[in-house]
Image (tube, rainbow, N blue to C red; front, side):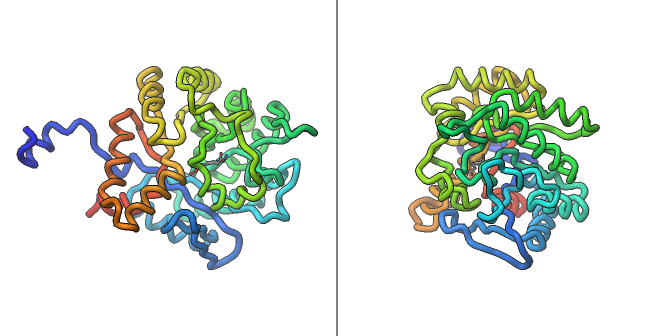
Length: 318
Ligand code: PBG
């Protein structure tokens, strides 16, 4: 059966399709601004005008959705993270621009406070530096509403506070955003693989050696992931996510097979950096990228957030 291409194709159990891809993008202030992310070769931060061009490419390739991550100027960061819900904030403006130019393209936003806090944590802190859950959820609600009002079809809380999915769902309903979908970063681990992302959005220096162990999950656990996913589904999540990806395929498998919900996986910045560095150095063939994405499908992912989305979509089309 493995001898010929025809029989290999006939017995192939899983296939990567362009419909499986979500493309994460970093957004900059200004006009005609383009900055390379040093720790993620090939990834750039783009101002909204250039982001629109990128969106056109993405839509033409058939990728269903983009995920936006704004780069916040340090003078806009504060202890109360008020910029997170500024209707004229960068994320909100980017969503409006994309929705008006490309009404069919899915736009997903990140709901978390880390790009907006002076300390780089995803939530508000008390005098001891402890992340205060319930006060943070109040701000996340405002942030999610501002994204929905700007036109985001999907909001994605990545903060790992308790009870935020239910609270955001209720606020969306109450304000008439009955179609806004919630993708919950349900099983998000306190991972060292987010380093390049924190460089990309400029939160690494704010975090300054701090960590997120107080709210993101312990990489040692997987039953706990099922518990987290169950809570988010009960609170009204439409889609759940496991993050990072490759080191957590077992978690992805368990989540999909336990709940049969639309389940997503995030191939995070550190995974991208590792693969890209090895490919650029000639240490790995770039087939490794496709293999990594196919592995997510095999483990049960319905969709994959990956910085390779554009390249892979081009490859799938060829
Ligand atoms: C913000 C957020 C992070 C990522 C997505 N949303 C960073 C973090 O939690 O520190 C990481 C994505 C990546 O590494 O590609 N809460």
